[in-house]
Length: 241
Image 1 (spheres, rainbow, N blue to C red):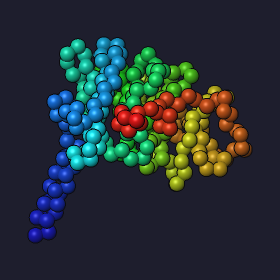
Image 2 (cartoon, rainbow, N blue to C red; image 1 turned 90 degrees about the horizontal axis):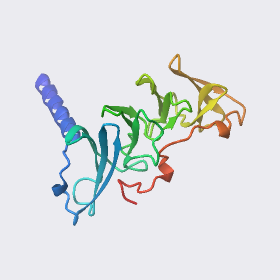
Image 3 (cartoon, one colour; image 1 turned 180 degrees about the horizontal axis):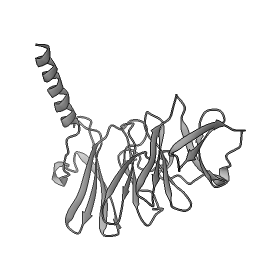
Image 4 (tube, rainbow, N blue to C red; image 1 turned 90 degrees about the vertical axis):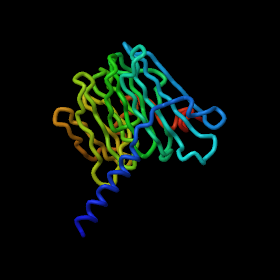
């Protein structure tokens, strides 16, 4: 009897999980203008066209609050389509192109919402890389991407833009929170919101070395630019104001 109950419970969990993550194809006819607001942003990059589509209902009785699709096309062929059904919690929600793209090698998009931010990288052939993150910074030599997780967990992702590989993607120890990224005296750092704690990002050994520094150790002039800062995004609510 216990075995049967365990099997039934397992099937129930798997079924619920499958329903929660079910892929929904975008069909414009499913979202009439009388009931939904549809926002589309598109850009050409290399051999592909990158399209972000976001749908919000005009009334709250539709069963969802924000649906978003990332579509990568080459000519008339869809190379990749990624679907999100987003809960607009924790700040902004939806898919966001930065006002300017910082790299020639990758087109970068931020996904916000669900307390589960992502940084999405697309190369010129349409290959998609999904990183835990949200807002992001790029090193001055274009070698590394840094991102603080837009999440209910505090963590950082560091990605090697030359080799196309993740160097580290790690939750912070304890209850501290990461802040901004810096390059100073040839070394990379991440600030903390608490006291004078500073994290040195050890690229070679793939870790963050935490230490206490004097106030003002990290200089504002050495701070890396942040792309898609949540506090400054327009149309923050799934493509709407």
